[in-house]
Length: 333
Ligand SMILES: N[C@@H](CCC(=O)N[C@@H](CS)C(=O)NCC(=O)O)C(=O)O
Image (cartoon, rainbow, N blue to C red; front, side, top):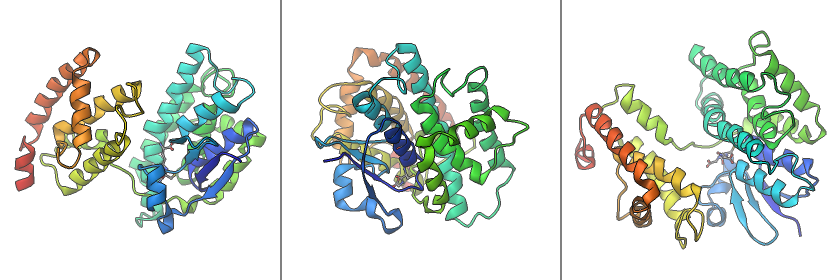
């Protein structure tokens, strides 16, 4: 029996996992998911991955994991013959993780937004603002590659695979300017020559299959309130926030903490953002009782003291920006 990967080739994160699997010689049972037909929203998929993202990985023992970055680190740690692609040495690993999070939190959200607007929302030209944002991603990457062979150092790593999948896709929409970003261009070429990156080419051709509706992330709502003069929150904001709370509620189903029976850094990460989002759009206790209980439990942890301090500062700031400060008032607008 082979581990299963639910995927489609157009999906950059799925491609990053395919490249990793090929690099370590792991055969996968690839199961194509058609997002256009909503196959990722069917109950059997949601039972596996309530966040309904692609890719989702199911190991031979039944262990389910999603998010390409988590899957890649797991595959190398479990199946690779050595740790070259994800070294155990602390600082090397930390740098690779930083690049992976850069992909997850900076490049991919932007790529997703832009490709959706072009492919499905009728946007038929990319403007200066789009180019500026893409160039910002390319610029960061250019600086990571300054004096380095690969994005996280002297050796090829899973961070290269992750960034290759998304940067090469973004490059289809807004091409990398060779004069401005020569190292990015050289790195893209080098990656494309790697035999394990074959699957990326195939996926790039299927780019038009990129379809999804993206959650509005915490930062998006926050930025619009703090810096873009938004002074009330509407139903669309509430829907997006509730979607986040809903995912979290399902992660907490039958679990003490967000990733299982034990407290982990995933709780700290989610606590910081969810408690902040809660300032803007409060978590409804009836709809999300587990999230409320988890927030309370986290708040009692001594190490979460700094979170409270930050929340107080943030809450003052938000209150001065939002005309209406309480959720009940928002609901009555
Ligand atoms: N950070 C995630 C992103 C996954 C993601 O958003 N995948 C898209 C396909 S490229 C998706 O699942 N879209 C459908 C949806 O979000 O409902 C990862 O790296 O796996």
